[in-house]
Amino acid sequence: MDTITLKRKLIDIKAPVFETLSLQARREGVSLKKYIETLLERDAEQHRAERSARVKDPRILGLVGIARRSATEADPEDERLQYILSK
Image 1: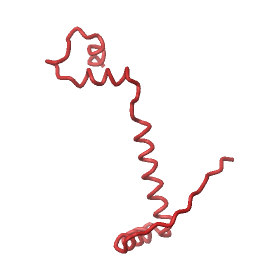
Image 2: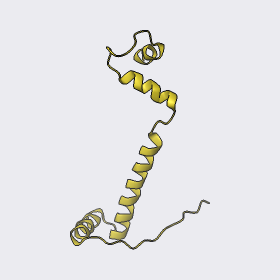
Image 3: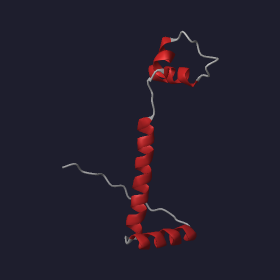
Image 4: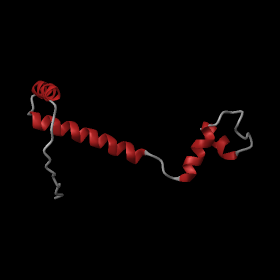
């Protein structure tokens, strides 16, 4: 069984934000603590997904750069460009 390491952190929340979050938690039928934890987990997961989706391979980035050029700038004889445009 995988163990999950939990981190505890005291945070300061401004009163208007606290009241809004409390109201939203009540509407969802969960505790304020659970509601905030869920919001933070969703946000972190979204950022992880965005980071992992970024292309890092320079060969692929080169192809993307070619496809972004306007037709007047692109070399019509470029085989990579023709391949991308054919898809």
